[in-house]
Image 1: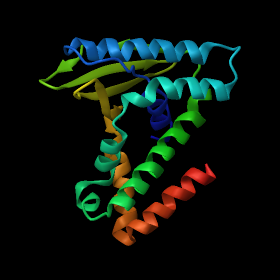
Image 2: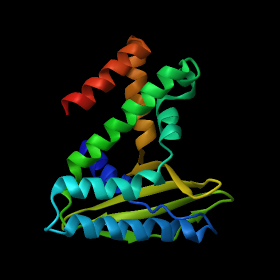
Image 3: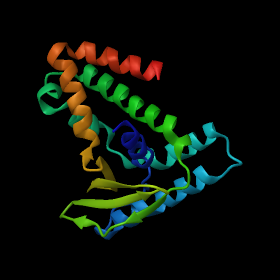
Length: 194
């Protein structure tokens, strides 16, 4: 599961920052930035730190990080947090996601991406992709919604396992035995020590 999560996090940031339009725009949105990120990853003349910076600038605007943090923590705990603790949790959670993601960028070895037709709703789109390597096929489902100005990713499922639900399970385990301050400390340590 950890390797699958790393693969997903590599692709987690792979979506464009263009305006919303009709539902088919979500797929074009995802494809165009996946192509750009892959070009950056394959460029041997760019140092890893520069690759990370360039990729971060491309993909960060695509994610609704406050919503992802809220969903990962769960409504039951989120509503009990003060605004400063909500901000601290969101900041630490995003740092953890990004650190894991950039730590795994070097694992990219030229895998191919196959797209399935999107499943569309009024304001949401789900885009199934497959990451194909020499010996395996990993399914990755992107869940997006249309905001006032653009598409936003709010969850990803890897091999049927939601990143949001996976984190929520981890956070529930910590909070059943401890406090939100314990969780914040663990998040801080995971970011600093990874």
